[in-house]
Length: 214
Image 1 (cartoon, rainbow, N blue to C red):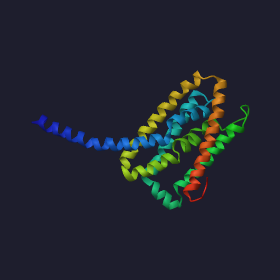
Image 2 (tube, rainbow, N blue to C red):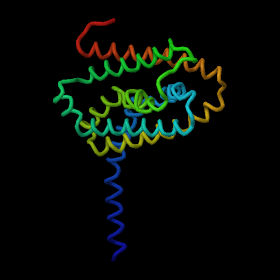
Image 3 (cartoon, rainbow, N blue to C red):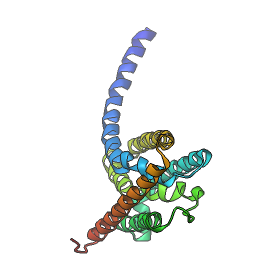
């Protein structure tokens, strides 16, 4: 008798999980694309090139926690915050682009013998915000809340940030295998790409505000 009751219950749970999994996949993929993990790892390697392993682990935790905190606020309070402050996603794009441009310019024009951004700072800015929790991720969160709901969006965000955490922790192995000269070359190339991404963010933000740009 008990077994007969358990089996239908399990079937109901399984059927109920199917829509959740479908919505989860629909939320996970856009967030994964918006975070751009493949582009994030080389940027992290460039920022953490001369950082001690303990500081790297701390920076990764700070970055993931920062991205999660910002994402959580946007899931539940995003529209309200924007309306209260009178800001738009375009404003975030411009602000994020300016931050990335400042970091990239410092890496491009500063000699290796001169001090850069302190290692303890890069976990929150720019790694956590705006590299992980960038305008793309925040825009995706706002859109997904409207389409699949807050619980599914939150689950997809946690899954993506867990993937980011694992990838960044493994990135240290790459830095040990790559030589010093190669790391310097990668650092300069990534800084140039970062500057291009920053300009693109600023341009898209200005275009979203109705300014005619090429």
